[in-house]
Length: 376
Image 1: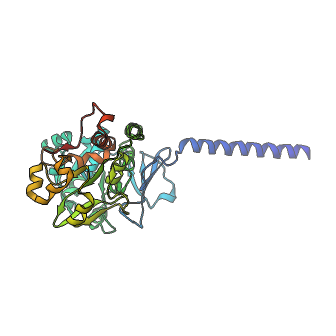
Image 2: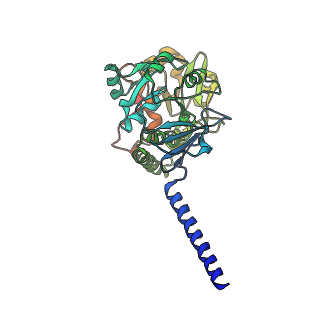
Image 3: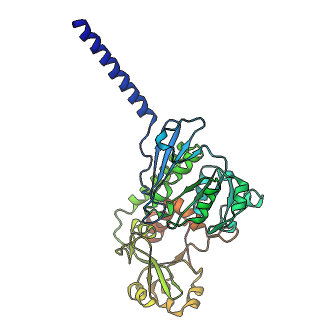
């Protein structure tokens, strides 16, 4: 009886230790969600594959998209059989947004880009050199991507984005056997959340470590700049935009642009409005609130004369009289693409530094504006 109990105990102990070892080994090979700031993506890393879920591909999305990014010969559990499976590292990619190009460039993978819609929008010098060398194909427009060219190219993946639940062009490409990943970075409202999507590119190109290091560096600089303004007492009043077809569009208070101004310790005059999109107001409404504002961010015009000629009433604003109008529109790529639109979502640290320099120049005495320029 004693011997039987002893054998039983040893068997139990062996089983317990064996199970613990397996669990320990499994935990070593699995890392929890790699994402800290972004709300629309999760990345779970296993030993030979990663599970990527895009949960917010567009505002108020009810559907999520799941992908398995697997290394060669990886064995994928049957529970993931319905997920789109892509072998990594990928060798070729098609992008559909200029905001995704900096991620390739920062990872040193811009030469993997083989197609893009409306090449003139691209500002990156490295990518423009590839275009000039004929290595990147023109794909038309996002609304009607050239399916024939894409089928001939056979990219490992097409990185697209959706504005809503209707994406017929991308659906058609998938029906033709092409792999599509939806990127929802544009839907993020946190400046660090947008740039964190570089981690998706890191998994795609087998450069997870490098992508994490790039993100951490940008995060560190961003947070250090935030600390600079913690004790500043003066908050300049700020507004932005101009009339477009009789409506004045400004960022809502919970939007990406509004958060930058607040983080730089500026007093955005519409900071308390709800929403992450744009306000549509009349000239009179904007003037009544912003006529004495300290700083004006302009998007359409590139000189004070242009602003006055567009509408003489613009000259009534205090910011115009004091010549405190800034714009990012003057800095463009070789073919006219605005650099800010391409690079800013990927370099929130530089955007924040620009705003701190404008609002509190004494805090960054030696810093030169990167995106913005004071209009003359």
